[in-house]
Amino acid sequence: MTHLRLDASWVDYALVAIYFIFVLGIGWAAKSRVSSSIDFFLSGRGLPAWVTGLAFISANLGAVEIIGMSANGVQYGFQTMHYFWIGAIPAMVFLGIVMMPFYYGSKVRSVPEFMRRRYGKGAHLVNAISFALAQLLIAGVNLLLLAKIVNALLGWPLWVTLVIAAAIVLSYITLGGLSAAIYNEVLQFFVIVAALLPLTLIGMHRVGWWSGLKDAVATESHFHTWPGTDISGFSNPVWSVVGIVFGLGFVLSFGYWTTNFVEVQRAMASESLSAARRTPIIGAFPKMFIPFLVVLPGMVASVLVAELMGENPTSQPNDAVLLLMRDLLPNGLLGVAIAGLLASFMAGMAANISAFNTVMSYDIWQTYVVKDRDDDYYLKFGRLMTAAATIIAMFTALIAQNFGNVMDYLQTLFGFFNAPLFATFILGMFVKRITPTAGWTGLVAGTLSAVAYWYVSNFTDATASIFNLPGQGTAFVAASIAFAADIIVSLIVSAMTTPKPDEELVGFVKSVTPKAQLVDATEATMPWYMRTVPLGTLAMILVIALNVIFA
Image 1 (cartoon, one colour):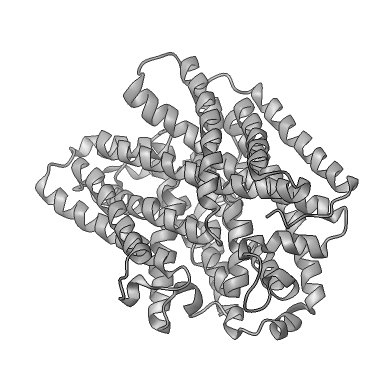
Image 2 (cartoon, rainbow, N blue to C red):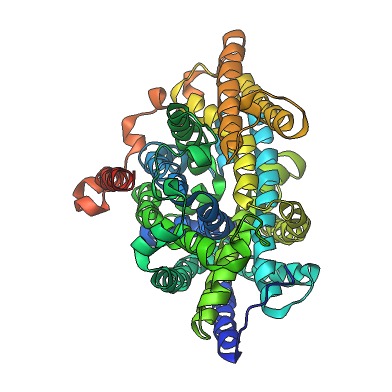
């Protein structure tokens, strides 16, 4: 991307510098609160719901959201809304109402630890290793895009910008742990909105608002969400709806939002069970409207940016937001936008790194390698893992560089790791007969089946239509195959092996857990807007309305 240079002035650089002073200042301030490993990894479980709710959504507001979804906006238009309205909100509400009581009430420190206590060490180790690997790969995406911003500003070589970008994120996570990451994520949420809102408004004004955009974008399907045949890859409208609802809306979405420790970790840092349950639901409200700030700029860029126009564009969809910033924003606003993008990519990478260091420290090192050491030892090891993950992410960033649309890459990873994990979790929480052996064999079978499908689709001459889907249909199918394979193998293996006794499943399986253990009694005295179920119901009503309006 050496051809892309942002014409920044001293005002823009000053704004970016001020932002970084705040970021590092928050890390330094949070350092005084870190006196134990539980402080470093879970913020001492003392944060209010509005803080964890904004951090929950900001942790996801990284490269996937800004670059990936704007790239989808270029290619698919409003069909991209499915990643938010079908592929996020229902799962976030389900997490808050149904699953957070198990996570928070069991007092586990991570999602893999929940797996260990429900299934045993086999499933725990498989989950911990696959999760750690996924976080390193996804952190590389955020780091690559963070480095591209620095490259576009200064024109330095990619490897230099990778090192600088990694050092910035490393500094504040190492100082303050999860508290630093969470409070920075709250700040980053507002900075990101302040960056994207002017870009969207100026771009829409330039094309003549909604009617002008419809005239400029020749593809009519880009202004409707359903049946979404372009993004699903299915030419048949019925199969397209099934693929989106089941593959994206159920398997990929629930697999990501309900079992991904990057997100769940924010809710687990809450001050109470009620706050933990409300965390993802509070995040659901801004999540509904963020797509207007990322998809619309992608659509505008497709008709205003010369490098993205014509039958043979010279730039990739991933570059849409940067190119639009270059062409539309005056100095000053450009500085705010640059700070917003930097905030976005740092939020995403910090979330990956802070979840990785927790799993490596608690779930792998303490459980299997060095046991029964004092707390200070694991705190130091967590900081060491933070540095190691940041260095490794510099190399995984080079893998992500090979994909023109990072959403293709990320959805593939989610299909490999999150889809089978969701199947194992759902079975484990609601079917007490599922055995420890089934826990790890189902995970392995699900992941291997998704990898096998992906390999056949991309590296063989298979001619069947299911292996040659355009759009992101391949990711939807891979996730569905992984989910189904996990379920089938888990049920078969459970029929041939011995389950845990009921007393060991209390707090982990719904049918044997007392109801009082899954609810916060204080919620009954709170106003409706502070109660989990009414908030979740309101979120679902709003998202259904959005689907109807833009169908």
